[in-house]
Length: 553
Image 1: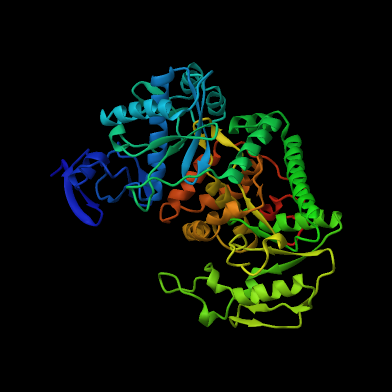
Image 2: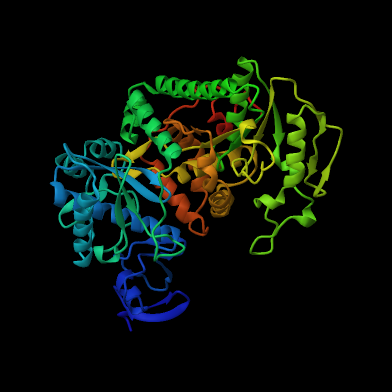
């Protein structure tokens, strides 16, 4: 039995040949259709090409799992780039720009090329052909110098510059049919695992579409999110203005003492945008009486609302803030979620009727008593807090349901001005590896929760999936209702947050279920040079997370 080992696979004990790979083990466990794409054991992920060790307790994940889907997306991205070069020529440059509803917006930079459906069908056909051939995706370990040389020879100059900042002496590249590239994260063992994808024209180029995790037989929906897309187009202009598009560009600035100037330009752009929003509200003076602000967790809503208030006052408009939390229904009548726990993110957790009555009273010039919610007793209370608006005053309301018309159903549209705010990442690692907006917000939240809420990184990571589900149900479906969108991301923030978050993440060892996420973020941040936060103005949105903000946050 020296050549045999015992393992547990998805709760079932198995005796297998020593030296077996996770891929071979998955097949023995019944995965003949190549659905399992990554393995987990001891709170650590393993690519299927890795060898199994004796005594491992193993879970296999398909693409319905978050980590499985991330592995799938990286692998399909490489397949798409390889197919583009096969169809359009190996010097064709592909850029994965950003995510739209879990699909990837990509651009092909080639003179006279138009991403028509006919052209995309050719690329998709080549992708399907390579997938059908079940070509191995090989991991190739090379020296950092060799990796830089390969990147430069393939025209990936931004990747070559980034690799020069790596501390490790060796780099893991992936090889598909002779095409070699670097991808941040784990990959599928072969192209035979990559069967579901689509390419459709979108904006100036195309979308790479992926299956829906909840229903793998359908693709993620997409639409022409005009306002959302406009924010990303603006982001590209800002990156161009600051001459920082990738992490390598940012590192170059830090290394050459250009960081402070970058911060000042980025903050000036934010202030200019906020002033423009205030000017738009001023142009509707007399009609707009309620400003509604919504956005996902850690988007900087609190600081944004107060900075907007300053700009409104510059225009002679006095804002009054009303907290949506003060309109919670009494705790015993709070709706319950699927697990039977109070669902405070459900719109019916708010006294919508009373909220509308009070807001309409204020709009009509009445003196209204505003309730306060007692979080200890779970009751709504009235403590003599009265509010009455003068002629040019407005109400500012910030909360997750602010863009849902059900919340303000009795308030005429002409009296409402809606703002959607989110930290939509302005920076990519390189042209083929994007920075997740969700990861950027999670990094912000981990730092803030530790600084001001006494919560450790493991707890924040543990609750993050629940936070994201609430956003997907209550915020993102209504984002296009906004009159204006504000991107609170800064190009510089991750290099500033890095020194704050790394010690918190290193406390999470392999005994924690959150180790997988902590390890991924640590590895990701390793590409960034750290930067000092002393030059960041004290009214910056980033100060909401670092501390030292001039505002009450």
